[in-house]
Length: 410
Image 1 (cartoon, rainbow, N blue to C red):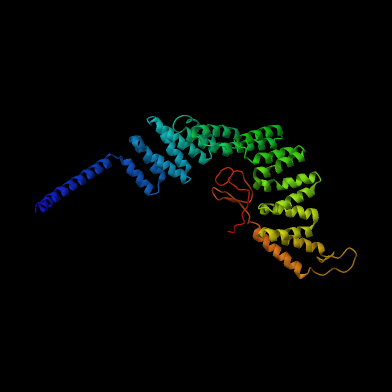
Image 2 (spheres, helix red, strand yellow):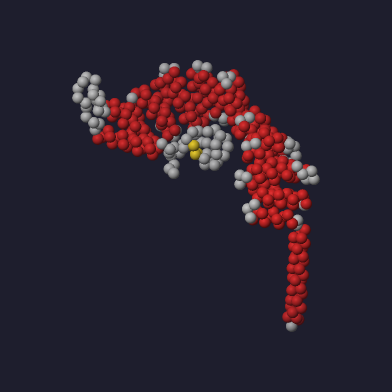
């Protein structure tokens, strides 16, 4: 009986406490709403009516009246930048950065966002100017990361090396892969300017930074070849096999040319035939086919591709096989088989036989099918390209392309 009486007394008390809490929350909400400037609601209304310019003006007024609303502007500026409306993003962040009463941490934040706006808009000088004002403080590391991206876009490789070294200290992150690639870019520039000694020095620094870098020995081989030292070039290129054999297809044409210059084309053919027995075969198939065709003719090329199809059947190998067969059939046709009178004045030969026509038709169909089939694919973003890139054009990451093309359909 006492238990039931206690519950009867407790229920009105709980109800009363709930009513008081609700009244308190309502008053607090109304108080907060009344404290918001009228421009805030005008700005929201402009945004809803798709009038972003007027919304920005309204929000700038909110920031002037109430400094605590600056986070709203940062969010708005970032939204505009993501949408590609860089002019509006710049306007938002410039208004914040130039306010004399803005606290220093928020000013630095505005300068950092402004630097990204300028970079996205392609105003690289102004982006660098904004970010250079943040070389110390809480935004130093973030600013230097954006500066590094900027220097890569501008191809200012020396500045990129300095920025990467600074970031290596600030972030405690390994930038050796990037620094080695920047050195290789400088070496390539030196080669184009006919400065081989400078190129060799940059490549030496690249190998010091990242001994696993494969691009450096490739370029060292190019330096030797340009100087007429084909044997030295071959030493650099063939040495890649002990470092990372997957990159050998990138230098296959160079190796064949160097051997040919030395009068040792047979060595090039044997090197290629040996590699066709490995997992590198799909990448080396074109080079092996062309070299065999030029050295020994279409019959030898047909035999090589037939053997390769038995060993590792691919669409590309099948295409080259029918190309070689078509070339072989053409070579076996008597003079005048294309409707032209033979040189000895006899009557023109008959049209090509049905087998030759079928071979040519299959060859044409396969060529059409495989023309855009093999692609290098970025491991980070999936960007596919016909050419091999050390820096992905899609995500701008370095060494994300495996030196192996895929025959994935679609």
